[in-house]
Length: 252
Length: 283
Image (tube, rainbow over all chains, first blue to last red):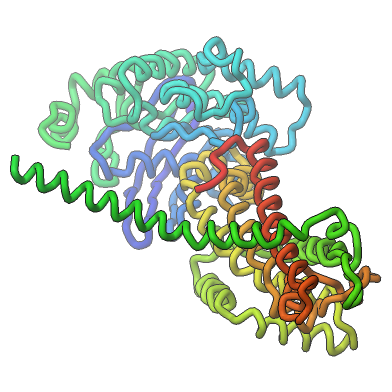
């Protein structure tokens, strides 16, 4: 397994608050890495540093390195827009564009970057929706509004939208937090399917979910990475006392 | 049970009070419209729309020049005030969290409260004096200034209502900030922005004071945009204070037509925008 994302001494700030403290982690190709930890421990901030989304919030700062295929995404000559195309993101609450149709939601990343060829777009839209396991449900109403779908379908639409720009890495920020158990299990199945093609990082509050979908797990606490290892090891034989306390439900 | 009954009665009373208040606010609206309709509709005929005003003493004639003039003035004002207002609003909502933004916001609010006649004098000094002529463009300049603060502030408010998660979703797809603002944020906020534009149009369509010494009015067809131009409010004003019965009847008809024009502009643009965005057309 090749190393895809290598994070070196990453620090992130909101104003003067240090939200991430010297994070070092290596994320391998085509596996699922889960980030667990209590609310406010910096999980979301961490993955938002991997697609340079942290910096769009006013008064924020990042230091350290994030190497994507060996190249530091924070070096001065790198365009954040390029990085965001390579590193896709699915958010906590489904957020399809309400003014766009299902088709245009999926095509948005291409269309708004100037790709107009209809055949090509049609092909990508269908392929992305198929990969997101949504095609069969929406193929007859592809021009309906994206927000007319149910919550779980909306989230899969957001995943399709993400896949359409052909990313290499997918970041999931608590993708099931607002979904019911059935939609959740569909998303989980989907994640297991997607890891054949993509390198996946998923932030989750739900430890069972981390256990079900991930190969590696990192435990974050108060902005620090406490432990990182094979999911199986983290859940059965944690090395750190704090990890053990968290996964056995003694705090958090 | 006693408390429950008391609450039920109080609820009924408050409900009735709320209904009454809503009704009372509708009374002036409906009575104005009804009165203008009753007084004006009798003088409305084809001549009114296709003929120029006749000299005193001659019966008949119409306000065709004023109707067209008002539409031209509205169009010209929109032409420069809408883009400026919207771009200003984008600045305020997307880049305006600083001193400059606060200053612009404050200035816009003050400008919104400046009496329109003062804006008329300003346009007079800036356009009419150097050009040595009253003109349509000076009128449109004055009206545009009145529109800008309304459009800018509504655009800002509406853009701020677009959730941050949508902007982040767009950015996370590798869409540039410019495209995100134009194709996602502005588009999402469009129905609300349109409401602001329509409010601004409705306001300037009836403005008379700033036109008195800019557009000036005209009893014949306008020659070009650097010449005086007729406008419905001016014509209504001139006719309403005249001693001639026929003119006063036409003033009522003009008032009615003005209301209908504003209504039509509002209705048509809501319809068009509704076709495009399939969103509730009002907030």
